[in-house]
Length: 340
Image 1 (cartoon, rainbow, N blue to C red):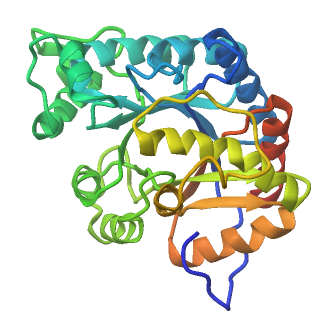
Image 2 (image 1 turned 180 degrees about the horizontal axis):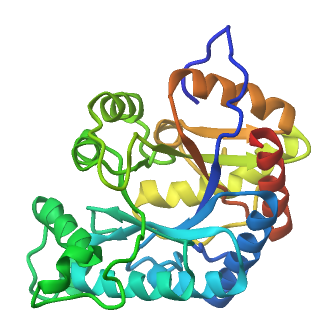
């Protein structure tokens, strides 16, 4: 958690709240189960009033099922009717902007006014796998701004006289979001006049500075008149504080895999993490997961109030990693009760 304050404002009224998912595979289950749970969560979130659900692109991770968000988004969109669905994000250096325009243009044509395109500049994997994805293309973070311009041009009606056109994307209004965890993404999002989503659920270090810079330097664009800042945080909610902290041990074990450079499945909760991580690992995870909220409706509310006092957000996106599917659905219910 960020620093607590004695004077707390009320929770923001009408603050949109959304959901991020990675289709993490549970211990003793497979990828198909992860995808089915993904759809179950999307349907549940839709009923609870969540604004959107995003999927993140990752590669060469045995227990992360979201290697192809574009395909999963079609699966989720076909099983829901109103919730917005999108990428959080597509790692643009891994792809041709033309292909992404065609793919998301297809999704937006099939499911009008429901598809978001969130973009990141990292590979979402290790460098060896990134090289395998790109097959000789030397795209890097330095090319990201020009790739972004190319992608936006393919969606524009002004591209109709170009020799290379993206069908059926041309002329479609697919909202583009920039994702990041550093100041560089905040700078680019403000320059381009795009909404900005910050990965504070695993990299909170620059959250406050990035949010402030983005707002103060935002330049209105054709598609975005004012700043829209999304902060992603971890939430584990339950009917008792004891249960919430117990359920959170599955999340901590997954985070431990990140620290150790391994892809762990979503493990069952345990009574204590004491014999699973060492002191240095526990400290590293606490720093990395500083924007994590655990507890009941009553204990979550002041945590959120403190967070909103320190960070001005236009939308809160939650990541909820719980082993038991029913407990996860309940956590989403409690979160909606707090934020709704």
